Length: 630
Ligand code: MSK
Image 1 (tube, rainbow, N blue to C red):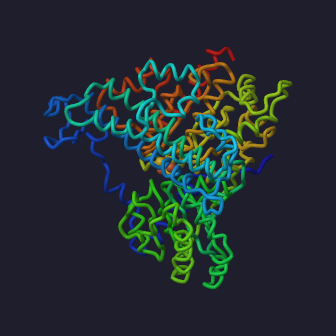
Image 2 (cartoon, protein in one colour):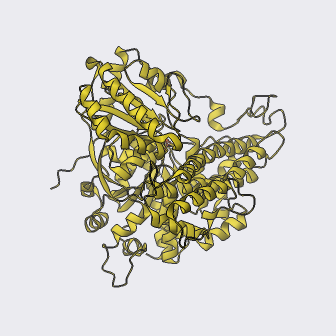
Image 3 (cartoon, protein in one colour):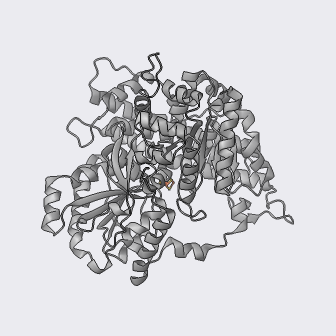
């Protein structure tokens, strides 16, 4: 009998309660308190029927006032809001990708940024029709960095990555007129369409929402993922730990938070240096612990095995331990609360990016050109801050779980090669995975993604759904804060096979994998699109026929809406546990949950009851299996 035991949501909540007691002693604010101040939420906003895109309003749609001052109806207002939500997310994700392309452009043999995966760079260059023969790898990285940046403003045609999609998917996009053009063009187009006096037809707005999402998933995000691999290495399985217990009371603790690995990689590099380790000892610490929060945690965990302190709603907890010398952030998902909260403790809150400037932070502008000196300055600042710690406030919850992370598509293909007894040489394809699915050992796969949201008991939807799915022989591929929820609970421990159905358990044993596979950060959902495409190509099926669905049960950000749109538009049914502010228009809601199926062979399901959401996903997977006769 296995002794494997998950860390429960109750244990995490008890740890949080204890940390909030420390917070209360020093007068700290918390998201838990702010939620109370902000609820109940505005009903007009929740339904998506509030319009403030011109100054004649704000207008709100009610049964008595069915049109805004300009005459726009609920469908137009809800559709425009949905498209603007998407554009915000696509712009944000894709701008992260642009930063990675800039870093690639700056890569040099002497560092600090180097090409770590030259084969991948050459492979992509060939894919993009760039001459590689006899070219120095750093000449090639400069050239590719430049081309990748130029893709964002490409004058004519579609994005380069589109050609990776299966032919059938590309044909669907063409027919639906949603093949993505340059990212910047699609974002501008969305903003233009939604300006006062432009589009108010729901169908047109949703079509552009899908195209804008695709410009992210098959554009900016894919650029972020692929060139991060080139620079920092394509992830392969590595052991790490997750949850707040990875912080160490005797060490200087530096939390890296945000998204762009260009910063966090350098921080890890210099924290490991003898100079900084010696300095840590000089100030009375035993060493330096780097731990991650949000997608930065995913980036450094899957390439370096750096432990993950927590996900989105756990960021304040890191400071509340009283043992955080520095919270170092780059972009996205950083609570503006971090500055005032840090002031209640000795923590240095260090912002580094012009696009994420926050009050009560120390701003150290970070750029690829000055990365070395910036990172050294930040690490030194953190180490020297150790002496300002107030020992009476230090409490680190003893919660941590083992996790094996880093399942890139390349790693999954390699790892599953040994599973089947197939006599066919399947090296380098997804055929072993397909064989597991057709044999019924695996019923299917779920891509679990997305954030935490106080509207859902933190992590509970991710974890409950994962437990239910793996018990039903459905393998999970997770990214973003969903991946960290799994890691924190112990679902990425290989021993978690103990709570799987017999088929998945057998696959985990044979392939030596955990049942929940860590695929990276939120830009890395583009990896899932590549995996789905490869599965379709190797099986001869369309993506929409595969027994695969997507799920974001606790999503909260604009980026998640952009992701949802590109996942659905790629042909994968997507299940949401939080409403995307469209309930105010039956026409828009109907398009998203049904109508778009005519264009892209997939649609959304929104279901707040998590148990029912899980049942619906399993039913959908079984429906797809039945349609295939497997
Ligand atoms: S960090 S977008 S809370 S997944 Fe990528 Fe997590 Fe969502 Fe931010």
